[in-house]
Length: 210
Image (cartoon, rainbow, N blue to C red):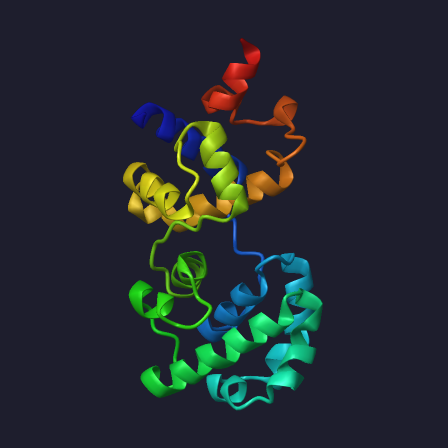
């Protein structure tokens, strides 16, 4: 497995050397809000909405004190806007009450905020604070299984499996690299195996060859 991991990481570093999160943000709070909005929504759509949103709401206090109906309207294009608005408002109220309106750089504290799961917390930690974390989105989940890095379906178990085999300092970058590879090459329905640089290390591809 060590040789396989080394091979995968070398290929990913070659093809995605400077990969970054696709959400636009300038501080941890903006990334937290953008990540909450990105559930069941494209990053492009979120970036369109946050271009306006981040000018209107600049602090946790702004969101905490926002009229819920107005906030719903402001984020409506991202879908599931009633739930998202409720979570954002409650999340920012908690940030005000417990952390002086600042986003805490701590996994447990983040996952205790309303509407924030491990995926969102790890996005924020890895990209806003440079604290390594494995982000298990739909692409990471799919690719980890196809590559044979996990047999699990549960995101938490997939995260644990990947944490055990990927060097800690690579966690954030590895997650981003898999996400970009999943978006561009290893798609859900029609993976482009003919141009994929990872076929040597891919269990799914090796099965198809037999």
